[in-house]
Length: 354
Ligand SMILES: *Cc1c(COP(=O)(O)O)cnc(C)c1O
Image (cartoon, rainbow, N blue to C red):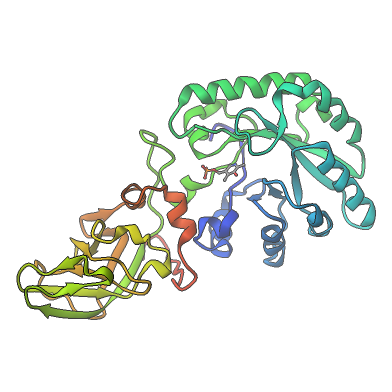
């Protein structure tokens, strides 16, 4: 992270699908500066869980959500002066609440949000003018668009961001105090090392997903597992699943696993993906169903109902990486994680049990 950089773990989307309550419990000993979420509702949920640290809402919010944000003591990230007006109005409606803080997002290329870097001289003085006792400007950041694959783009966005910072009259001149400048997501942090600024906003790296090809792989922290619910010997010609896209070539042994696309496992794994059983890799056959997936265990001995299959993670010497599943299904680890369904219980284990 670089020496002294403040940590803002991104726990949006239920901590990337893993479960926000246990995620913040696990991360809190790192003494993060605060937590990053995407919506006011996510911030409110953290407050309900008793979180007292700052909560940064990194995405723009709908016009009707500003009062809730002020009441929950959230730090909004603003992308235009209209948002600043709405926040000022909401702050005035709740005079007994603590001072209202906000960060400014600068668009250096992500395009989806942020004040435009190119027009800083138009909006910069306006933002500085609104900074006051009740409404406090406490941070400024930008978001990298290609840090996973493109080192040069990181350098370019960082330079663009620094040119904007030079034009801004930051409260306290960006010196010590509590003004926070940040730009790095996981991939950005891994690429920038010591040069990453006052704070860093890692997400995927905390949850065991790769940040990009060639970047250091994090320690895997999650697995997706399911029980074998049925084992059958089938004669040649037996068809399998919707569309009967698989047909037993010889006498085969099949195991039905109690997990399907209804649990968030991508349906595209049908006839493509694998599971681990008894430390061995076995192919997923036929189309996946909503609730069950069938694997070929003809090569395995001694597998029976109740055994645990691994769809993502390690079993003995074998491993199915999150990013392998993502690649096989044309997506990214983030989407697999955040797509895991509510029907799958999240079971948290200490290091030595996992
Ligand atoms: C989601 C998000 C991050 C975290 O990105 P990772 O690639 O998961 O590290 C950081 N900053 C912002 C603004 C985000 O929306």
